[in-house]
Every structure is written in C-alpha cells, then in structure tokens.
Length: 219
Image (cartoon, rainbow, N blue to C red):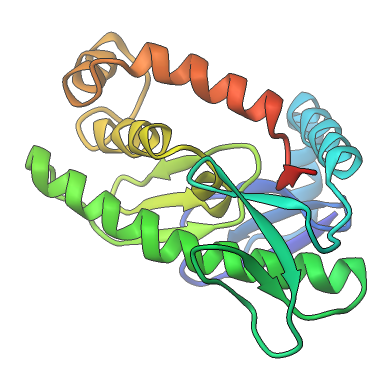
C-alpha cells in the first residue's frame, strides 16, 4: 500500500498504481494506520481493484508501431517519433524506450487529449443546461469515469477520452446531474433523464465498449 497526501484533497480515494499496488489518496494528516484500517474495512473494493489491475495488465497491447489506439472511439496508429510526444489527429507519436517509459508517455498524451476535449466539453454542456460548476480536472482513475464534489468541481478519468463522443457526453451529463443530487436517488435519475434522455442506452453501450476495449486498443 502507498499513501499519497495532498493539501488540496478533501476526500479519500483508493486507486491502483501502474505497478499494481493499492494507492490511498487522502488529505494531509491522514496516517498509515488509518490507511491500513481503511483497506481492511473495504476488502471487497480492494480485491476488485486488484482484479481490475490484473485484467488491464493482461489485455494491454504491446506498444509497438502500428498498434491501434483509441480517441473518441476511433482507432489511430502508434508511431515512434524521436522528438514528439503527441496526437496530431491522425496518429499517436511517442519516443522509443522501455514498455514502462512508453506507457508513461502515452498516458501523458491521453491526459493532454482529455484536457483539450473533455474539459471544455463539460463547460459547454454545463452552460447549455444552465448548471453552475466549479473547476474541471482530469485524473487517472480506472474504476470510475467521473466524479462531482459538493463544491461543484468535476473530475474525469483520462481514459474517458478513448470513448465515443456520445458516451463522453453521457458521462459528463451524469456528473452534471450530481450538481442537483449528490446521490443516485430517484430524484437524481429524473435530473439525469432531463440532461441525457438516452442515459440507459448510453450506460449499456459504455459497458459494451469497455468489454471490447479494456485498455488502450487492439492491433
């Protein structure tokens, strides 16, 4: 277990790191003892995280030239570039290196993409529906697509940018609905149906997409 403390964090979250180890992200002042107790209380969640990490590791393609990677549901080839770390609209480009180094660089590209595509899209949809929001952030979550804080700040996993645009919008609408209801009550789903009348269809499509594309893509 690794414990990460941040003065900006208000809530505690569990994640799986690149090395497959459980990470506890918490506010400053949270102790190792509290983190260990948290893991014991949530053994089932920890086990699911580990299973998910192992699944992703097994299904991740080798990052060699020609492997198809996803952006907004479309496949684009990976190309080795000795200078560039970017997606130019036609291909993903990262320098040579070990598998771990290339994975880290590819994540950097995806985070940048999510910042350019998801963050402004959240603002557009919030304005369209007249929903006030705080800041919009991109994170590396692998167990949830997004989250909404009581302060109105939205967080989205960079993995979401791999999904088709209509599913990205659906996830954003889900988090916007939480601005009215910070739960999954009937009132929340009434709000969600107003923002995304096809949310049930989109939820099913998102699950199918994940099963078909568990990691970055496929050859």
